[in-house]
Length: 639
Image (cartoon, rainbow, N blue to C red; front, side):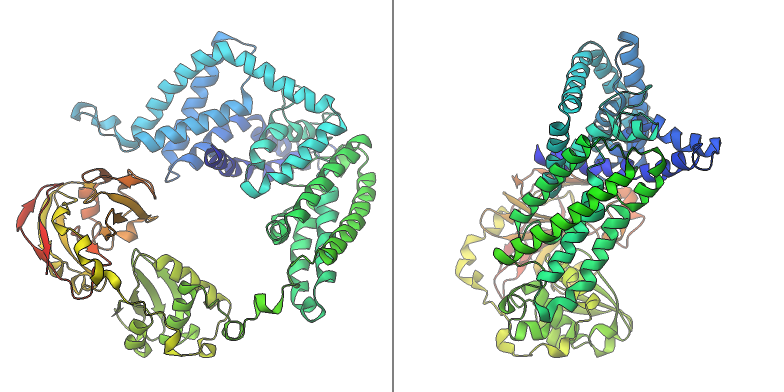
């Protein structure tokens, strides 16, 4: 449920992102500013259609590949829902919640049916074209149900909204406290959507933001309290952390804190500040949430009405100054909270010896050779990335870093200076020099972590010459698989595909054919269905969907790589049917792929099946030649 709610919160950000532009247009066009009606109406058009915009945005956010077909389904579903509900009960107004529900349903239906195959005489309506159809049918059913039951939900929502409003300062404080506490798990957007776009009514406009921008004299009470925190309180907390930093590190952290403090003051974006102490000092974050609650209560009691289109920063404050109530008093409250935040944060940091940036102990940030080298020697991927950088001629020789399933894809100025022997000594399983400017290092399924670490090191200006080249520090872990050779029963390995089986040496890619990743076999598929060759667990699902890593119940690690250079398709044509960490059985469907479509776009659809942790010297032999069937066993043996 938490994961599902987080998906909703993440998806809400897409439609919410359009609000700043709409709010600016709406305000600039009003009589007290530019008095240009067409600008005002242009901005108002967005707020008048928020529910539809939410249906579109959330449908895209929930769709696994963010495809536009999900957006179309969201529009169709919302129109069906609202028309059906109103036909049953004209008093029902689902508004933004109707858009959110429709977007979720459309996105989930897209994920389920976007690749559906229909009979030939209906094939035109298959695939993504089917999604708006099934969404319309689903929303028609829901509209019938909601037509009779939503009035009770609507009354309950109105009751909660009225309670928060009638609770006055207490309701505002509770909202402010929960708003901050939910940020670490990303659920504050869900709470905000009710306050900002649902609660309250003013001439057909709902929610604090929309009603405030349309001059509701009662709106803004649940928004004003954020301005003192975002414009003054948190920037003052940054000053406190600068003052509390160790003298020798104060200059180092000042630039960082001033930058994020200015961002919070001007735009109201405070997450960069909050995340500097959220996890290292939870007590500070709870204090911050309590201070936010108090600010919400104080501004409510003082009768300050102010609002925003994006966040409570200086831009929104200045823009909405003319329609706010007591905006100057809001500045006074802000200054007071700046003092409170500075004093509270400074003394709590000092008294509790909280390790905010600039206060870390020397051993935390400067562990002899680790700090000198500029890397974390306990992170094997960072160490590997650092050594690879040194082996290929340093950061100056690198122009771009990318990766696919198993290999680092590097653009370099001169691949000739790369030391292949050193790369292999430091963990690379193979090196491919495509030309003078393109270099590939075969790493394995952990390549993504190495690539990310290498990008960080290059961006930080890491100098690999600082890293000691003591070979004793290389973790050359002895392969103990020889002791467990009998544990791998290769006769139970099943073919994951229907097609022609072939030795790994015949795969038209030297990384696989030269067994840089390990030994195995390959299948030239005759259809687009992939099943598990073993009973085991899904360990790796690549974002581009073209490869799957499995660990069998007896510990054998298997990489199935569908086609060659299919990483460049970025997931197009692939549909995964399992999730990472899922236990699977031999013959269970793992993936569907569009064989004919993929075949036209890649050099080969030959699919290597690699065993990445076989004992040293183990060699795979084929027990069969020609075609094999999906799930067929006893196809390979070992020497």
